Image (cartoon, rainbow, N blue to C red):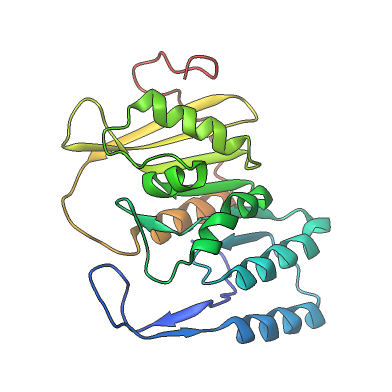
Length: 224
């Protein structure tokens, strides 16, 4: 997408954690510290900081401090609060990290969560039958935690079990929007990472086109 990316790896795993046990994970916190120190010595300024999987509270602290150090240059901050899916946390995610995540997303301009992660952030039960207006209420509450734009993927579509939706809200103009698509009954780890990366890449390319209101109307900031 024409964006020069500087990766900051947080961990390396032998497999993803969905459906596999006894996987091997190598924590890279020490490397993260060395890498950030090197960038600081070079005086590198970033246009955006996009964080995904963070394996420990210490890694959260490192990234939060890095974002704060870049704040004078006002980078776009996007946070994918990776915690779990389908009602369960991912294997490496500790209870302390999940507990601290609501404070961590305060640093973000945009967050992208799946439905399970949105429920965890709000201490709500994860329900596959959550209605559209209920999810929109969750989005508003998540935005009140700090991020100006909240995007929730894998939201149920009330019109059909064969459909799923991405629902979002921009606090600056109070508008909601929705993108519905066919549900594919397959487990594809990494799709959330790809989704958030495309969102960041599009914004870095200057994609600020007006967003339509949600399908079917009836969704307003006061009515959700």
